[in-house]
Figure 1 (spheres, rainbow, N blue to C red):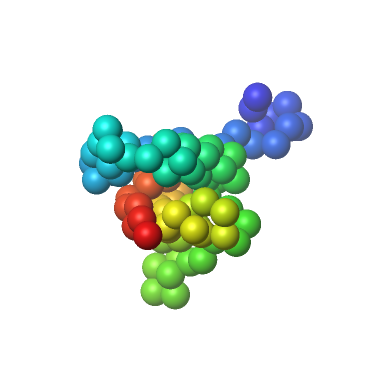
Figure 2: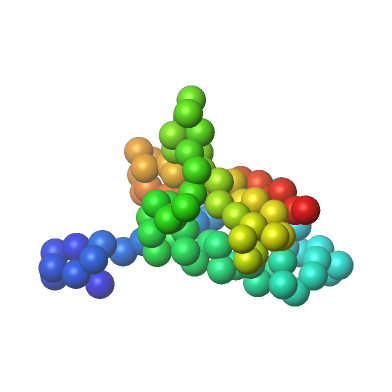
Length: 98
């Protein structure tokens, strides 16, 4: 799908920081946490980082936080929208688990 065909614009790629990659590779990571992180990357991609309910940093609005799991029961995901890069993308920078 492209913007020129009148459809919604495609999402932005959501890449993982080294820290998040290491967390996802941890064999002791519970499946529900793994699934919540993967689901978060999909939503971040599809909404181009404008996830409903996300909170932005007052000093750096490109940095966002979203809850993981039902009502944030698993933790928080932090990401940065890098809209001025070529190509634009989003970096999932950190996962804080509860």
